[in-house]
Image (cartoon, rainbow, N blue to C red; front, side, top):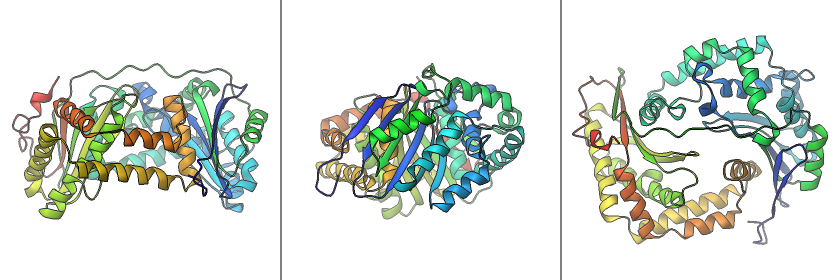
Length: 430
């Protein structure tokens, strides 16, 4: 919300190039954030070149025929700006944030890397080494490894079950031709969104983008297939760690499902905050874990809710029992009026606090337009959260408990340390 309590307008337009532009003016700031959102991620990669999207995340900022990587870094450093990128399973984002007086520079750099990246063989080889090190780093982090195995078991044989980094084998064989082919297929204006938030004028940004457009025309969203129903109920990875790392994943709804707001409330009550049932019972009351929480993710045609915990190996079974008991209790009894109020209040504050940052606003409207075809205002989002009632949460809790689930464990355990049947996992195979 603005200082006067009136929400600034969000303007959306399809430019002659085919690019979709969305902007939100923040009169009270002197910065601007600009992002290019590409509607392709790791699930859109053929298995043999898994990791291509992440390669592009690294390579585009390595330079263009006109600017080297050091030229880009120096130009942004000189004006106090920053740039970054990230890869998800369904999209890849590239963005800059800088003072609004330097918006033209930001648009210059982003337009150049998006429409004419160098993609040099030497740069690919250098980034291959960096990415392989990144993969090794994640393998050395059991908290990351257990989540990777959990999603692999929750969506077996499907791209949603693969890590966005790829693996050592696929990254080791990706070529410049592979990366360029993926770029030319998906990095087209009709499969992209540009979002701008901060001290900006929509019409000026639109003209500037069209002046800088030098890409291949057309493009379309990639064709995708939904994951099949069966899951792998149990994955145990033996590691001589001091802690047991647990990830209980459950199939959930897509990002288009009308119940997604009720799932967000349910997730907060279960393990989304310090007042959540799992944090209070596992950590605060019994001292069984330093970290425990849950997270809900939603994709175009599937979703998940995942509970992750790190605990002493001797406590692993007890922690799992608390988690499964709480899930059953939620399905049987729902949540209280107080839990509903706390969850709504937290989600509301989270949305409003993000409004104070131009980068967060740019991300919200960019992702909204790319993934949902519209950029909702904060007030519209808050109304959807506020509309969730106890019956809604009870209904989705029952659906969640009945959905396929899987358990991944990383720690000093033998293969027979956990019984899928005793944990109720085998009964959730579809």
